[in-house]
Length: 613
Image (cartoon, rainbow, N blue to C red; front, side):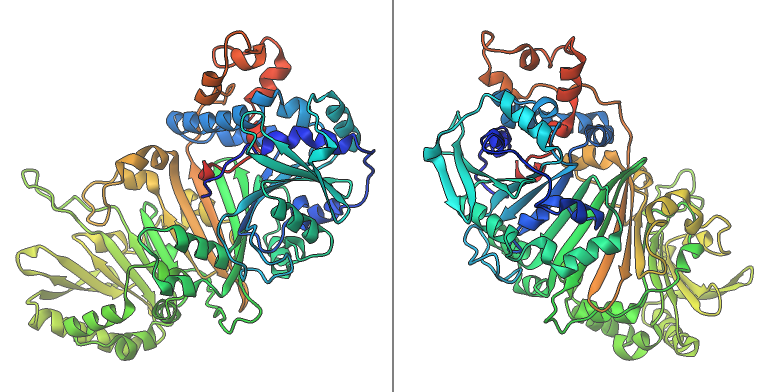
């Protein structure tokens, strides 16, 4: 995202300048209190002008668990990226995370992107200019005594000529040994927090935020989000300033983003999320919120989900919502995610009226006030002759819980008339157990649709040959009973506003479905690492929305030592290689401690996110 990439975390070792200046005592930063609330310790020094902040665990076991997910190809790519971080920011300075940082650092570190041109740390979130964001790293000190011992053993040094005083905090300006023009600023906040900043004004903003300015910990909705999520020991915690991030994306995107999209996200002030490592993948819990001055509100359409009980267990894709009428209203207003879609609600309404004579606002929306869903089921191949070429079969099912059956029946009767007289479809009434089906068959039987009622209030429309047979009669083994669906949605709040579920492993193996496109060749490796995903949306109140996402990932080989990065190999000479740096790529060190330390991706834990490489 940002072009400038000086070796930020290298200067973790230079905290010796701060630690040797005086003894560190307990107290000062109330990071234990913050942790009890689920907040990262470093957020008290992150100004509210920050575009984003990510907190990463420093636990090597969690990073080893993370490295175990994926295919051999994605594991190798991930390990190589971690090795590049380690060699770039730690090894080339003779620093080891396990030896020099792990003994004293807290359980998690925070990295934030802050605009240096922000007017002040007291500015309202999202109102500052964006562009040229610099990184701010915050390292909590969990063990001051261990920090002093580690600092005394570090070979780094600096003179007082490179120090700057700001509000009682000494900022040491340190240059990279390889590029003197790349400097960072290191300071000690209180007695338990170290800041490392790429820009002097960003460092000053962090000090201002810590000493009474507006910081993330003071942002009420941010605190409330983590209290709602209820996860304290997460692998990662994330904050995104939605207005600022949207404007930044608009500045850098090609082609230019439409103004309606940018405007639609300005009232959503922020998003907070936690990422936890589970046995079978990653679980993300997040909340977003409107600003206090926003006149926009969420309508509570949370419902006890019924429609997953009406589609088969092997459903490939399932998307549902709590109220179609409200869904269409949000889409028409181009609110939030609706602004991201390529669908134009006005054009769709006109197309529906022109092709069927029905108006969405008068003939359909009044009775579509309940739960609705679209499901993609495996295509039926039973009716294809052995010597015939199978045609793509849509296998799409639409379900809706109607609020006025009489009005719905009148709309369906009008559709029957249009389909039969205008489009020359054959209309037939058939029985499937207790369900009465109406089938629409096009000339030459190239297209088949069927409609009916699964119970007194749930109507369906099935597209594709044999598609109705997957839901009529009601499947004995439904999607709601699927272990994969339960895994990806079971921990989310209930009732909720709907689901989005994809069985990606089965989807990639499906042939003959019109709605399954060929997956991009360049993303095949990543897609093979994902088996399924489930997203659950929940309206918390008028101002807040919650999303729960579960990624089921392929479990790969047990991680071994990290490889040497190409950059490290090119910069090292045989005469200057240390045993630790020179032999890891080919064999494990005989010493167990270096092997454990250098094989852990925690070497890269307090470093730059992969998206910025």
